[in-house]
Image (cartoon, rainbow, N blue to C red; front, side):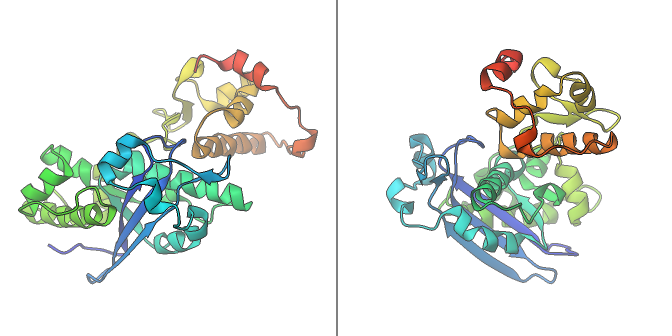
Length: 296
């Protein structure tokens, strides 16, 4: 069954140096963009994983290399992510997103890479991935027939596919699995509609990809970890505003820091507060902050 699309749907897959969103980098990124009417365009990048703090290539984790087969030598001469970022974003701008287990890892890591590159280049991100509809094909599969991508391909498409854990092969297999799912299940079970599929596959809704901020029943952002877990961000900011400074200086993903900063700016705006330039603001030492919040 062909996809019923109102706008392009971009399937993507990432291979990385490891499994840490904040501490690892992309080494391979593949897009399969499907347009209304069925046209497909494919683009795959090999990427030199860059450590922006130390200005050097980030090394591959041995366990990651054992899975994806990509070595440090394989990517040392490739472009760094900040050099391909504009092209990557141009592929994504007009599309909804789809992937296999991408909502938990690939999408957060891609968002983190964009944040890192923009910080390095001194500019704001030109795309908000949080605004994109996301269809996670794995969630459909796990809800209907819990297995792995390889088993999903065998079940819905028939036979195995070559080069599993190569980004392009996995991305094409994910597209084939979604089509197979639509063929297998009735319209009453699985709708051929991206809005419906994105809602069906959505996991617990959080404000940031790392899940440090969640929503309560009243749709208010609440802290989702540590000593303030369950408290609204509004309550924490009113009673202990230095907590937000601790987040900004702590070991959190850049996306988490951005979302806390956005909430802080919204709360300031509600109170009519115009923040002073950074050079005039009070600065907390790391020792002060960690002594207050070291039980996260």
